[in-house]
Amino acid sequence: MNRVYNFAAGPAVLPEEVLREAAQEMLDYRGAGLGVMEMSHRSKEFDKILNDAKQDLIDLMGIPDEYEVLFVQGGGSQQFAAVPMNLMKNKVADYIVTGQWAKKAMAEAKIFGQANKIASSEDKTYTYIPDVSDLPISENADYVYICENNTIYGTTYKELPNTKGKILVADQSSMFLSKPVDVTKYGLIFAGAQKNVGPAGVVIVIIRKDLITEDVLPGTPTMLKYKTHADNNSLYNTPNAYGIYICGKVFRWLKEMGGLEVIKERNEKKAKVLYDYLDSSKMFIGTVEKEYRSLMNVPFVTGSDELNAKFIAEAAANGLVQLKGHRTVGGMRASIYNAMPYEGVVRLVEFMDKFEKENA
Image (cartoon, rainbow, N blue to C red; front, side, top):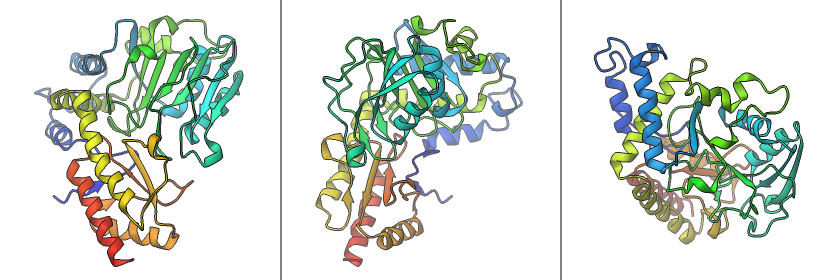
């Protein structure tokens, strides 16, 4: 078997141990005589898969009893609508725009009420995180919204915004479970699984229980009410059963690795290898201001579209795939999620160094 090093931003690399275990259970899940993809979501086997996954996530993150964990569908983009529909009681919300996804989330919120852009890094093509220590928080804002790690631009928040008592909502899709998080600082966290946790099709929502109410905007569909999913343990309709099963295996893998503190150290070690090389290279240039660099997504360029294309093609031929940057920014991007081994980043840097010498 010839496995490549997959630097895709999502759907992305998964732990090999998880994939091997899932492969072994594909036709017969633990003596059930069928696989999880074929299994009723109402079966006792799937009930245990779901509840074990939920408990392992609670253990990993230290999620307090005051919060509910939901597994929903529709992608992060559907949460752009679900958040205002459920939380915009005063029809006012404040958004910090640090990239495309926060920008799209704010545009969606404007359908439902007043969405204020209270800070942005658009002036420098989202290459930094603005100062969030003293923001002009709207007096009647229902929440303050951030995209905590920007997949496309490779920036991340080092300090959470001072929301001045307002609820903090965070899209954590591309940094979810990459480090410890104090859940109590948030009213709601959501994350698409396909970047750092599992296959595409599952969204994990962690929401404070007092925010789960029937008091939602008029016209909110049943499937977009958090209460619908909370009241039914994420089983109101047929969930993405196989996706939840894989997420559960990843949660278990993270626990066996030693938890989020250990994973954070691993991720810092991997990122340092790549950033140190970018800082020393004369050809490859990191595009993010140093103090805001993401541990998960590392964009870089050569300064030449022709050289970028040549690098991407030759890297792929050498088993280093999915390094093309997002279509809106070009260049290259290495996503080095939890499941990317240290050796993969070392191999990438070795190839970059070789390419630089050959194309100087």
